[in-house]
Length: 490
Image 1 (cartoon, rainbow, N blue to C red):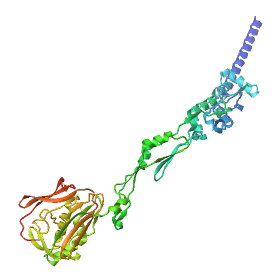
Image 2 (image 1 turned 45 degrees about the vertical axis):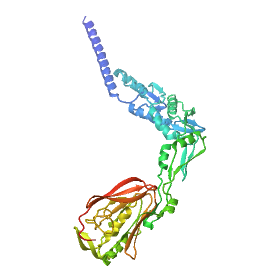
Image 3 (image 1 turned 180 degrees about the horizontal axis):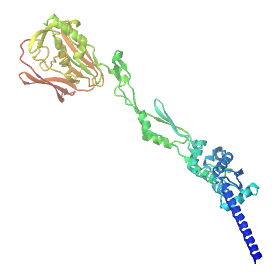
Image 4 (image 1 turned 135 degrees about the horizontal axis):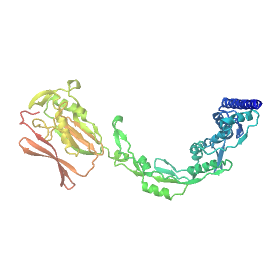
């Protein structure tokens, strides 16, 4: 029994030792499995020919991407349009995703803990599983097709010769173009995307096209460029009042131009003459009619006046003589004669001031302004400014005088005619001042002034317009006058 008990004890000890060894070995193996853990790919794996064994997943992805770029960076599709070929690089549209394959290759050595040691030994002994993957690129960036097409320049192709035009001095010349085709860029983009999705880089794409219609000229816009108003002939005050030639006005009949364009064949010239409008006063009319008529005239006598008065009157008349007033211009007596100073040669003579007759420099010049006003009353020229004397004068009828003084009051009239007018003044040997308004008669009316008394010292001046038979067809009031009793003659 004692021997038997000893044998059982020895067996138990042996069994416990074996168990202990196994436990130690298992613990050591577990520790070993933990020690060999890393982030590298243990499998002998390749993707598209790139060996990724020993790489991290990130390194593997980068290596695959680099191989993809090296292989496909020059990938292009060929597009043909009207016999011309365009190469369109589509690499920016492509992408590659090998993440699933990399994950599968990474599984060896990164799965269950207890298998890691065995898989590590297999890797070291070259017995690791061999994995080979082929990953195709995909059309990952279809929106890049816009840049690809833009870069090749095909969108600029146009077999059409569009319509153009030019303006000559007398006509609009339209060069009608030739209709043609242009690439249907949107349809082309869809075809390129389809080929890229199918990884079909070999077939030549026949570019879809669309018809290009000729652009109809903007006749209204062209007409606005052409339109000019006719300009009457006039005189140039800066060039001795030489005649400035008239210019015709031009315009375009847009309806006629459009009809001519639409009826013309392609690749032809259409000539649309301008509509020419002559001005009222052409150069020929100006030269033929300039200053040919006496529109109005009046004479007043300075006989019996002092030498100073006649001298002053002659100076002022000389300043006004030959003055030309262009259409639309206003003549100002004070602006022409100016201040009647001794430096300008004026002398003292009788004149009105504050209702009295006194000696003043330039006395008598009011006879010039009054005689001019009287002559104007026989025309239809507009009287802009006129003031009567404080007392009646003897050299023109009451209501036909016009007092002036530097620098107010003034006498002004406007040339409301289409032709220039000129003032002619002269003083003869009998001291008679004559004023003529010469120009071009523009109506058949005869203008006659008429003064009506409203009371003993007041009146209104009218113009009567008479036809060829002497009938008054129009009457207009020109001015009103109010005087003080006459104390002495001017």
